Image (cartoon, rainbow, N blue to C red):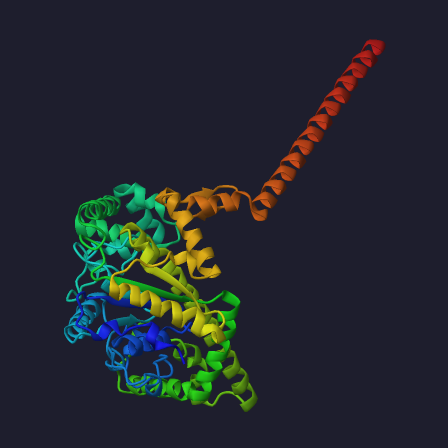
Length: 493
């Protein structure tokens, strides 16, 4: 048992601040466990920040923490909406989450926000941002509100046009943003043009203004005040595992979920969809709980099962294939979560001068949970509650030093390297930043194409030389033939 005397229960005293602990990370890294550990240790309550876990009746497929693992800690915004409901928009989640945080603070307790829908978390952490660059997640002044139901494409039909058409229009009104996005990145191109239509100003100008506002606020009011700054004294824990270890863990996790009843829940969802169709109503499979990993991957199996069109062996083979698809989708989702933290969350913390509040905790080896997760997280939480200085985030582990050090080095280069696309006319590929451009130029693929082009050019030169030589020989023979004809003509005259 840990020596609790080392860690006085500061949170049980009347709070002189209104702190917030946020826990982020890929699925399967142990976020929920850490949230319960810290809530137990520091008299806190947990707020769920995962869109799928808000749905009621599907605890396994949405990966909700079991009741017997919650240690009696209150969990908010979990299992609270019905299957038919739309996922909460960011504005609704933010307002409800802030209300709960206020209530938890009023009772002298610590709110702990945890979940994998990281744009939910980011919306709560930071004061209102105008527009999120390159994304439609952060919506504020000049963007759609939660009450607005009209789709932007209804007002501006060009937004539904082919990507190349939308990009051409964006080049006309905002060439800076048009050069920034990959020609195939439909969402970002569409969003940049949508901002222009909504605000009457190029998105590049809007983003530049946001940056100036943040810098001014940071200079005048410090890192906890101003537009886009942290709402509360905050500590962000990023639980992270090395790739190979996490992949193996996720594989096992899916197998465990299957044993716990994932198939049964997915079957229930499939039956529900079929019943709705029989009643003449349909369900959008691209929204809400219907995009949860597990249901959509198993849909072909349950469809074949319902139609009785396959043999037992064929069904079993299809089932195994569907389960493998779940594992693949889980790996891809975890990668996208890490990408969000590395790019969106890290960049926003850096811009606000609060990157030192992001601590990476290494959960690669589960058996080292106590020394790698519990001890540093408790010491850092203690420092937050005492308003004491905390150690350099890179000092916690070798993994933290490697990842955070690389991010710091990248941020010191400035944003210019990520502000423009580069197109290789030779390979017909487009890179979204200068770093990728240089990697491409020095890569084997690009060099191989150049080598092939050089060989092709050599062959063409050689072929042209042979043609020229043949033409010259023909001309010479033609001249000789004319001369012979002239001599013969003289002889017969």
